[in-house]
Image (cartoon, rainbow over all chains, first blue to last red; front, side, top):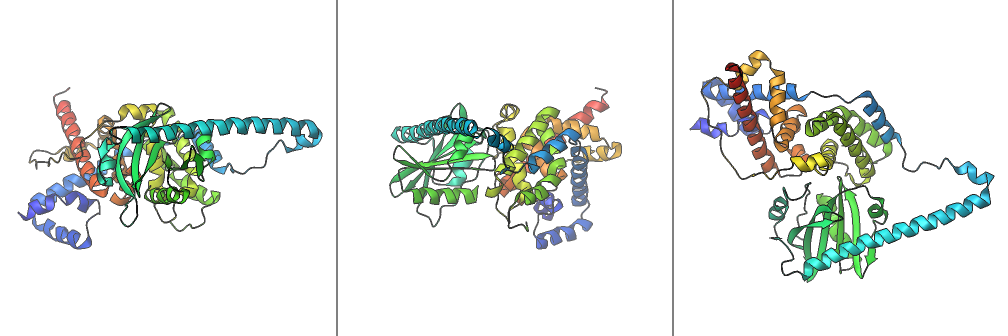
Amino acid sequence: MACDQWRGKLDAYLDGELAPAEAGAIGAHMPGCASCAADALRRVQLKRSIAAAGKRYEPSAQLRVKIAKTIAAKPQETPRWGWRILIAPALAVLVISLGVNWYSGRETSRRQRLYGELADLHVGALASTSPVDVVSTDRHTVKPWFQGKIPFSFNLPELQGTEFTLLGGRVTYLRQTPGAHLIYQLRKHEISVFIFADSGDATTAAASNGTRAQSFNMENWSQNGLRYFVVGDVSAEDIQALGRLLRDAG
Amino acid sequence: MPDQRLTASTFEDLALPLLDQLYNFARWLTQDASEADDLVQETYVKALRGFSSFQAGTNFRAWMYRILRNSFLSSRTGMKTMVVFDEEDSNTVPATASASPESVLLAQANRQLVQEALEQLPVHHREILLLCEVEEMSYQDISEALAVPIGTVMSRLFRARKALREILQAKLKGDRHGL
């Protein structure tokens, strides 16, 4: 009877995860109980053999150098080609300004297209007869539903005390990449939150501080290797408020 | 984490010492040397870029593992290893009186056998055992690294240990019969 009570807690005890009072009680029970002690020993042996077997691989010297370089690279490095501008100022200025215009024009249109696609996903879901595939206001129901359906996991915020309500979620695709589409409600307005694995695409990263596209307000950011987009027809402040909640949970 | 000002040098101080363990973990996940290299590199690039979103006071190591793991899950190999698994299955381990695989293991100090058994485990079992036993992470840190609640950490750990024991038991039986 007493043993059954402890058996289920032995792992947590040996992992150092029991509250002091409970750990003390198990510790007191063990010396007088051969079967619990044997069980604990067996578990400790398994823990030790995993720890020994698990330390197996070491990074190569090349990888060490590569990582050190990655970290050392300052993001705001001064351009090395600066001196060339002094030699041929007019030409360089001309070439660069043309290049920048062309590049930024291209980036802007790519970005516009991406926002357009997100707005389409948002409207498309709301227009559907079943906007969400998992219908629940409980984040603990919605989040696990995605497990095995998309190639990453994420956290959702607690909404108690806020004006936002979670309506549910569905799997979505953006440029052949699977992601999570969550729908929140705020004063009868629906807001979409899209989460994808971060592809490192500069187009998405460029304008992270609130954008307007097709009369929708949008925000996007990258966190923990994931990229988040918040899209809705509510005010920019409301979009930012939901963004903050998600960021804090993420 | 004592750092309040999150600068590039802070990142270096925090992230560089984790290289060995992150690489070990990456190699266990990918089971391939060059993929592990790429995965670790990608993790550092993403972490450096996202460092401003890292909140001082939360666990940096768990945060790095989480980035690594999300990068792995969205890689080609990661997609293939991804399986739907049932967290609700709550079988309990029957206490066995026979010679336990652990005692045999200790006697033989058979590290290779355990390594083979770990390789055979599905990724979600392998990774949680590595985080708990090799990295000695707390349940809280594991929960942050895997982005699952603590209850799930406990039940998944339980099942992972059980699965590993079963593989070991089968292996030991095979050895004894000369297979």
